[in-house]
Image 1 (tube, helix red, strand yellow):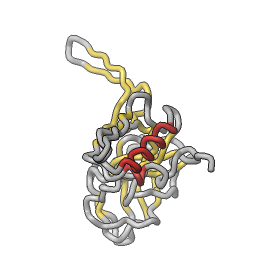
Image 2 (cartoon, helix red, strand yellow; image 1 turned 180 degrees about the vertical axis):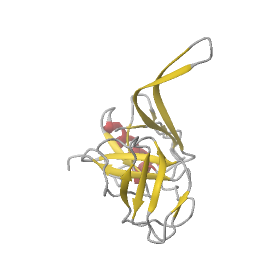
Image 3 (cartoon, one colour; image 1 turned 90 degrees about the horizontal axis):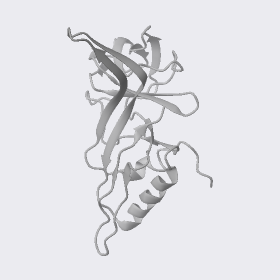
Image 4 (cartoon, one colour; image 1 turned 45 degrees about the vertical axis):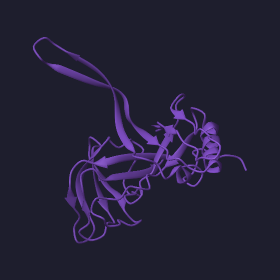
Length: 211
């Protein structure tokens, strides 16, 4: 069977777990300038990207070889879908699968949501993803806390990074198991080391978001 791109969750993401601690870092690409009087300017050169740090736990050599092979097959340009299976929304409540984008703010840093459970509470730091444009994924975080109405509608809430232009009203929003699309730049994967009689160990992965 030919490999499809991006790799689906079942092909790579699901077998990467369990991992050690996971770090999500939002990397910005900006040009900064300033004056002697203390004024400062920053110009965005490109859209910010998420960068993850995934130390992989020791495991049976068969599983380790499988992971090595599948990551090697990616190269630097192919991508895979990843879901952090350790993640849970802070309120402990499932949002369900009918949440949709409502109104998007003019600066694309706010949006409203519909289809939430009554009085659902979104907490700053919770994550969301929105699939769009034939396999692309928006992945972001809420940066303020807000409670939905009894009808499951959430007013304009701030998010980061800004929504890309292809994301529009009525698109499905994933809150329970947000998905991010990643690639593995050259040099960002340390493969498992096999030691006879022991678990394979020493692997780590530092993938970068692919928009």
